[in-house]
View 1 (cartoon, rainbow, N blue to C red):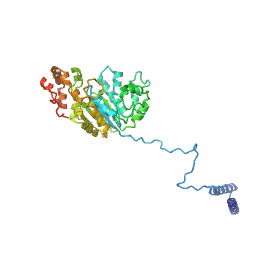
View 2: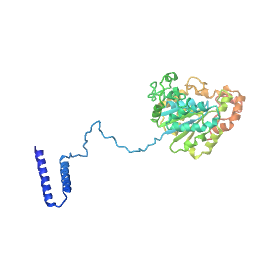
View 3: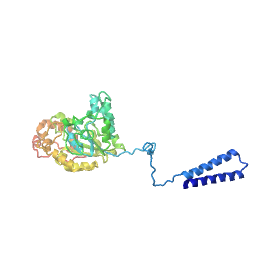
View 4: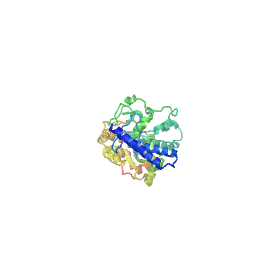
Length: 393
């Protein structure tokens, strides 16, 4: 009632003002007067019914009419700087075993020989002509863009899934949650391919989403023949790529043909010796023989080079994998083995004439990498006689 009385008094004041103004403004056009009158009345009505608002007061809104968050039309994309690593190696150089260490690391997204897909689709042909395509694939993969796999699928673009990726059933990310429930990425343990083969095929989008969670991406490959091919990637300021060049004594093969394939390419070694600006601080040589002799300390050096922490479970895994009960000569099979027996097996597996042939073919590379040439069969037969010298890189 009090509020109603006050409102009536306000209306009376408005009429009083109007009459007073009318008496004084007889010459003013009647239409203008009425417009002015309604404007004054609206002003008083607003002042009377206005609800005061306070800075810290939250006005409740309907769940169906809540205000959307205001965002700029174009949000700047903040590029996530990742540590990218390419394990540069060749066939039968211990790269499968070496790569498995990164495959097991809970903090690493690892891909095993993804360039195989290019070779399967385009080979046979000029292998050198595939180098550009290989580099382009690496660029996409390092950006967690796996749609490029569709280009090399047969038929092209026909529903490529996670299970179609080369060596998918050995890949710890693909066999672990959330891609598959068979394993956990944070538990260091080799996966069983038979178990992983039961994982349901997933859309590549899910794998891309998982890839984006990692700060470190490691790709292992043997199908880049010349390090110079990767120069455009290493020069790209948006990509922090480091090269781990894994080499092995070319004599450590079951036959001369394998030994020839293990011969590091001269172009790469000459490039490394010249130390171009695009390679400064981004290249590390790792000899397989040095690694298996002292895996823990070598790992400390490698992880320091690629700027990621080395956890105890990975050190233990590497040590156990190099201290198995016996040697293993099965290609592409990663298992615990006695690495001392494996590394020196070539001394009994090749005849001295075969060894001499390999040394003649690979003398340039062996000299730079610190692999001493054997001068006699007796020198080869003395297993305790080391044929390792400091590398010249």
